[in-house]
Length: 215
Image (tube, rainbow, N blue to C red; front, side, top):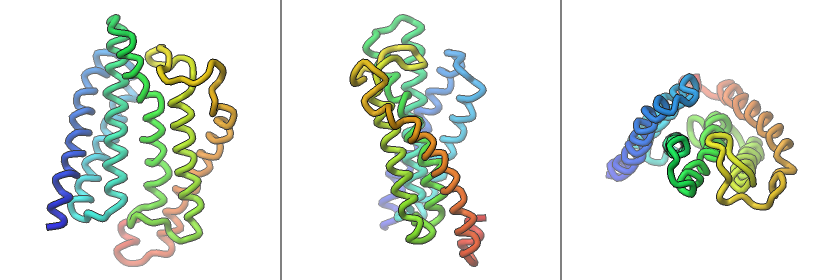
């Protein structure tokens, strides 16, 4: 009964993600916007949504499954709103509308790719770090994702695609949180490498079923 109680919301979230990604696919083609990169991204995050729903429907307490679902949902929202913003911009739609549509696309990719490259390898397959010594890495990864997404969300100036002004930009300079941006990016790159390496550490310590899942 517990499993059935989580199956419906899990597949509802996955369905919402797939619906947004499917709706965004023709917009990618219409906008002719980096089709070679956006379509593989759509396939990747569609897979995340389905994997997450399958995992949660079988094991409701599976944190990795919920993380897959969250990543797929955030990425789907980013793809759809970003493509709609480009479409509005190129067809002279309401400026305020495509400003707000473009906004999630500027920082949403951090909330999608950040956990995908750090939290998933660090927490796979049981939703916990390999050992207590890895907890600082988990908190550092979370801190980097939070800082970079907030810094990007409130940065003043214009977005890259479409080139419209950030509706919630703070200040007029490089941004209130920008001074540490370069350092945070460098730290994040190191955290990604460490998190991926945790899988090798976990594999060496694991046995039986856990080793097969990591493999």
